[in-house]
Length: 146
Image (cartoon, rainbow, N blue to C red; front, side):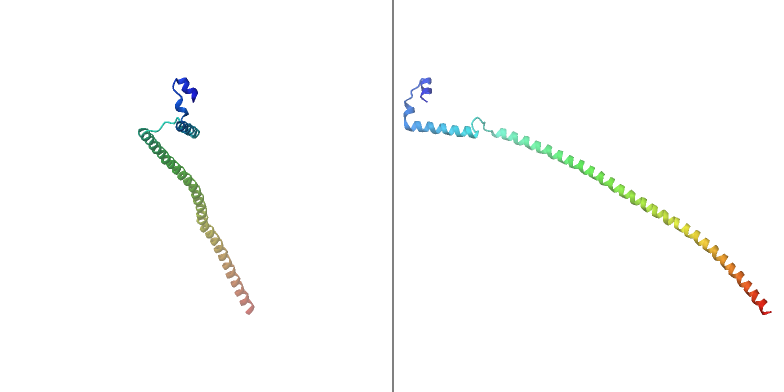
């Protein structure tokens, strides 16, 4: 301190006063604490600067919200398409199964009709055979009774 006072060409008798010396030491300690905490050299924000920062932050928030809404829409559309495609595949599979079952049911009456016709013809043949055998039995019985 004395060196500074001598270099400045001022009297240094005040530095030796106990109250002044204590005040100077406290000021130095305070500066050291502020420097350690990073408070020295940082400009204070003005109200106008804070208002500008606030408005910029609001604009950025607005932009981010718009981007979020846009991305939500894109995700919804993509999910909808994926669900439609997955649902369509299952539906196509089910429709094909139903068409095959329907074709089997449509073919079944024709098959049943063919079997019925065969059985009908077999029945007619059997009935004719039975009638022929009856007539032959009747004839044999008549011949035996004579």
